[in-house]
Image (cartoon, rainbow, N blue to C red; front, side):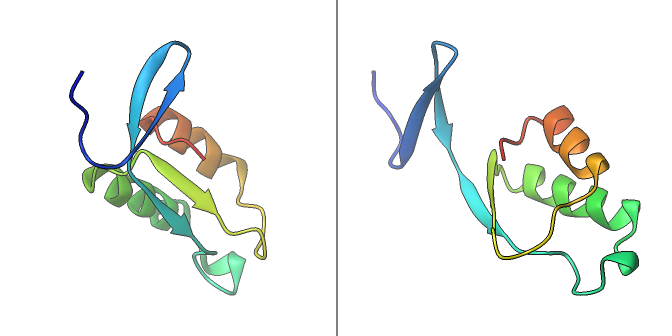
Length: 77
């Protein structure tokens, strides 16, 4: 098997080529982060072929919608 340059992992017996990014809080004031802003962030990642986001642990917990939409779009967190 020829693989592209980069990191790969096996998830449920499938080889996945990982393309990821680091994610920091969308805004310092979480009440200013709308559902539309979260949707735009995740769709932009998907359009950039990102399939994994590392959530910065010095931040906050995103609302449930963020995790649900990431799951729906196939983005691993």
